Amino acid sequence: KEVAVLAGGLKNWKANELELDTTQPSAPEPAAEEGFAVEEQPGRFISAEQVLKVVQANQAGDFSTIIIDARSAARFKGEVPEARPGVQSGHIPCSINIPYTKVLTETGMVRHANEILSFLATEAHIDLSSPPQRLIFSCGSGVTACVPLLALHHRFNIPLEHCTVYDGAWTEWGAVENNFPIAGPSSAS
Image (tube, rainbow, N blue to C red; front, side):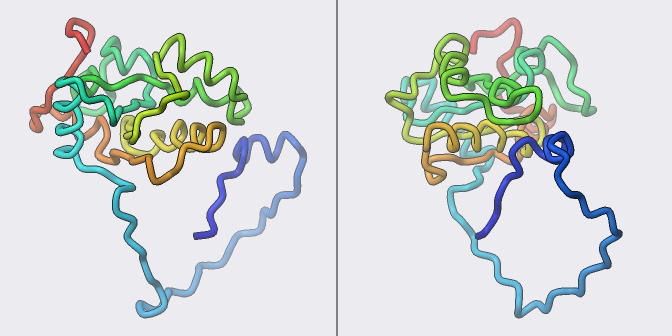
């Protein structure tokens, strides 16, 4: 429960000439099974089937939930091939592209609120004065999706309870064998 994200990452830590421990850590002792408790947090992650229901609701005009894709604009638009074999180019229909680079500075810090708001209004067409009830964050593999999630939470106090990560991400959705609907350069999203 006590987790933090290092603002700017290790690169920023080093740039500020803060102390580093360079000793090799010893292997941790295995935790006793009875001493390790996991608390499931329902709603933090979402399945592809649940995402498909959101896409269908969006297509029917219900935008109480929106899907945000943190991949680069070129990958989102399907302008470049995917690096993973068997994964198609494009994006989840009705999803909105907020590349993680648009919420971070070059040094890895979260951009100022006015910079993020400007991008959201002009390029992503999102108005945070009346945010959707729920936000689903996706990316290529389910990790980078957390960058815009945490940035929007940090700068605009969007409750984490309203945020979900689709950790199957584009790797699952775009896989040829899964046959989920895909929007791309020649299709309307």
